[in-house]
View (cartoon, rainbow, N blue to C red):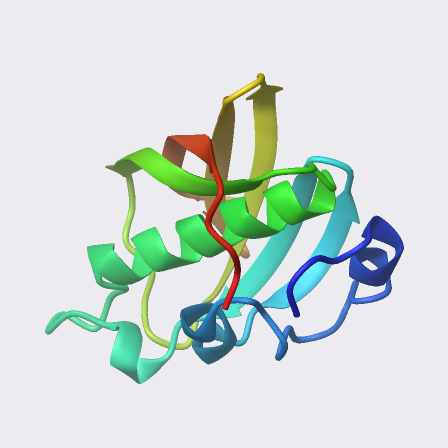
Amino acid sequence: MGRIRFEQLKALEGKIITDSPSAAGNWLAPRLVSAQPGEIVMEVVIKDEMCNPYGNIHGGMMSLVIDEAIGWAILSAALELQYTSVSLNIDFLYAAARGERILATARIVRSGKKIVNTEVHVHNESGVLLSHATSNLVSTSMIIK
């Protein structure tokens, strides 16, 4: 996909994302619920392969959902530079089971000259807060392959 204009992203609302710049993101098959400049909501159904032995989403998989949501929030802001994570801090607050739909809301808190600060809240369909995350990303000269 590479660079995306906000109008292109907005056209994906309500659809499952299959053309993410991230192969891992495509595997998640998230549905873009809504997009505003610098903020997105995406929905993910917890697949069997995403679960720990207890049948709940594995922490690493929740991290993937969060990281993918952050990527789409940055894409929605149509920033000139590319960014990569330098920190990702997650509080895992409640479990979510196989088959559940979870909603990740990611937003840019601050976009500086070199650092972008983001925040993500992940809820289940009942509105229970499952996790809260913050992340700092740094501008980079890396090119999307």
